Length: 257
Image 1 (cartoon, helix red, strand yellow):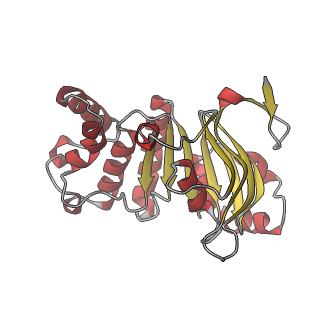
Image 2: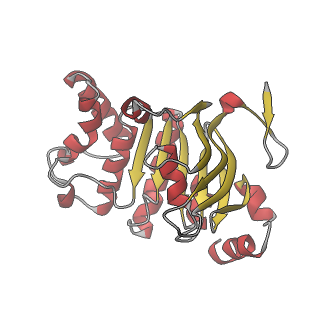
């Protein structure tokens, strides 16, 4: 059975959708809705960027996918399946997560940070070592950083270590919450290139949250523009840039590209 996307008239089979939001709503207390009737079908095997200013609901959207939050209404499905009510540990092992500033544990070495989830998942020491060294090589990191602590390496190296950790369990889906925003612009370009290469090699789907349209255009294949908890426009990056749906989207494209 084939489902039809509302964006661009393109057909997407269920197995070609990595994340689906079905009329999702989310509020905090009596405040205005953070997400207001969000319906999206995000393509698998690609990077989708969710772009919006602070308070638009983009991080909340990401947290719903990882079941850190639950929707007040509607449903979130990951690779065609609803998010389980229990056994979230197993569910989350299929999802990698990278955040702004790398989010590394300061009391653990870089190696321990990367291997932590695999250790908790019961991987053998030899399997952890093989995967760790593989990721280190793919990320362009030298083994000499392994026994050092995060604060003793550069910001760019920390971010690469954070990406190693996100990729460690060979996830099907990667969630990225503005992971490159704390890195200087020159270093960021190199990380963009490395990330794109590793993502392609690993064959993972990715959902990137960012306020930076340049970053979205550089890394993503599919684009979602969010404002005040609503989807203003979605579609292939090139389509959104070529034909902004309203003045807000037009402003983002004009000012940031």
